[in-house]
Image (cartoon, rainbow, N blue to C red; front, side, top):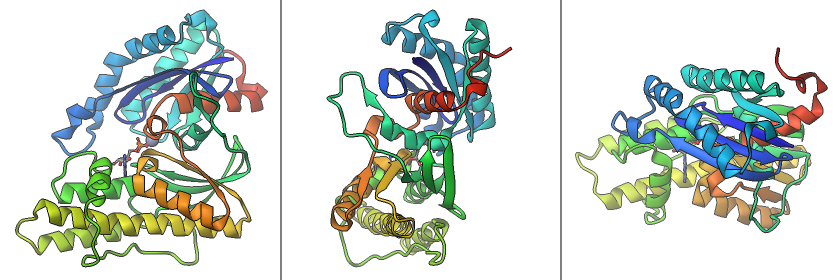
Length: 330
Ligand code: KG4
Ligand code: ZN
């Protein structure tokens, strides 16, 4: 079964074709990030305008790359929520109209859950990667969300904990802004942190010891107060701050994952979302998994950020599990 996936929840306009919920035949992602950078964050109005301009071409390109025609598509999967309302509307309207025109089923997919599905995908030319098995614990770490799920099936996700304020990616972006490092902040802080190892600067992440919830707004404010003490920051100082911030944030994430795996007696951990690209999170969680005897899965870097392959993949599974949505829209 070939599913055409469409994703337009934030600044990306993305389309993919995925076979049988597993094999990526095409993976097109077009981002308007450059148009937002001068504002220090995504401007919803600009994002949705670009998506209106680009969606037709991006979908065509996804079909061409997969060497398929519209008639070869068995269903359309599109991001339903969460996201920027204007952006979501572009993808949803396009996907609904397309499914109606080709008289194929339409499946509307949750963006957050799809991030975790990225772990179940492989590119057409990959040598068979080891894929996870359910049940599992899933941690989504993105620009808008930080959530822990217990996943028993692709349509059975139970939310166990989430951030009570800023998402972890949002905290990276804000800390980068405080230090005037540009947007998005995650990749640059990750890079600076690798050069900034030190013992002098320490930040703490608030913890909720009795729950699986997170908080990242306090540490962001602590960085702000630290930075305010200095009229100017040189690069070495920024590296040290980045290191101290990242150490604390990553430790808080890993601590909750270990606790939840123990409490739920689970052996498999799936990570998804933009912050899953973080080098320290990948390294330290893999180390912890080896020591504590659980398995951790990260998507390849190209599948950590927003993309439509994860939407097509999860869409296939939802379609398989629900005969109700497997009819063309009327
Ligand atoms: O999942 P995503 O592409 O979009 C949302 O659904 O939010 O995630 C984007 C977020 C941004 O906040 C970005 O700063 C963060 O992921 N990010 C990173 C890294 N690469 C991207 N955060 C930490 N380390 C990274 N290497
Ligand atoms: Zn996302």
